[in-house]
Image (cartoon, rainbow, N blue to C red; front, top):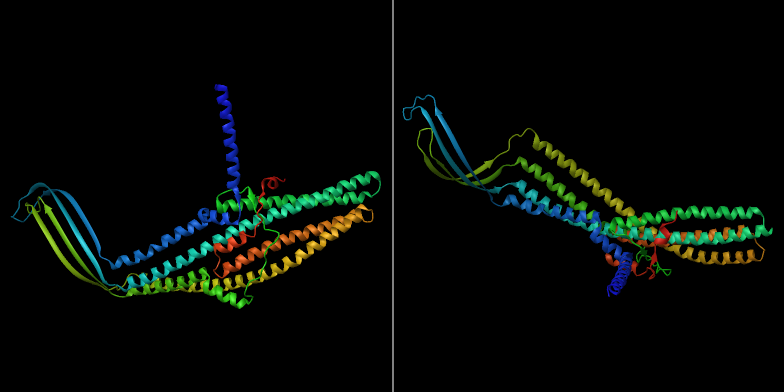
Length: 462
């Protein structure tokens, strides 16, 4: 009975381990959709931007605080040891006395007029709005970063698969040449040439495997998870150019909608308000003060105790006269920072314009290259097949086959790069105009091959 129970337990354990392995493999399979969703919750750069915006949002209540009443309270307890050594006052004599005393005060201050507070409020509003625009820019950066990491890794995987296919083809031809050399039907130089080509492809394979490992680490950096399977781009890529090909239209959209440009413009408004706030330090300030205090003592200099309560109100006018040049210096500093922000905003506008134009040009160029390279791959495939037939019939040397196969695989690698370049430049164009959304990533996710490719067998190449 015990043995039967142990067997059942072992079977259950093995089944459980198998299920965990299957579930673990499934959990580590990824596509573009899963990549950006994981990045949304795990990318440290994006999470830091969220907390930075939340911190910046606190400037609004902080700016309102000086307009509201400021209430403070304090209390104290004092124990006095008094020793009168001499006195000319006849009311009390010389001698020692010890007595405690306690006091408290409650003070209410209310600002009536302080122009600096209003400037601070305007600055806070602009700063909070700028932080919201910066957060939107960071969100789009996160989406683009997730897509870049995913497609870089997928492109590395596709390139490695293509190189390994080329390696197998060269290896087969090398083995055939070795056999023919033993039969004396070909020269030794053809064998050496095939061997050299094989070693060249093997070196490229090692480099491509390193790129794949780097891409997987890049995915882990933004998602916090390792991927065991990836979905490459489908062989049928619905490549359509942008609806509007006029660069001026895309530049206009970018300058109007790019959140980073909007954030810098709001930052310019905040810097202007800061100049006003510092200049307001020259102006008078008016406020009201209410206070109630009470002091109770069991002794005094005159020998008797007391319990005194006071209430008083005051309207206070403060006129700044001179503070060692601090205000002058801060005004100059604020003006220089305003000029700095103005130049940063101008630099960002020019950079956004350049990115929009380059991305639009990249989309159109990549689309043309995809079409041309697709036709080229088909033509080179037929050329390779023709040379292989001629080689098997003894009408062509192996060098011609190797050259044709190298051209074919090189063109295939270029096609892979062009297809991925088209996808990324399309996303970068959306990013430049401030319109990159999760729906754009989902659209390209639908163009991925439904068959997942395990990356494990490819990353172990040395």
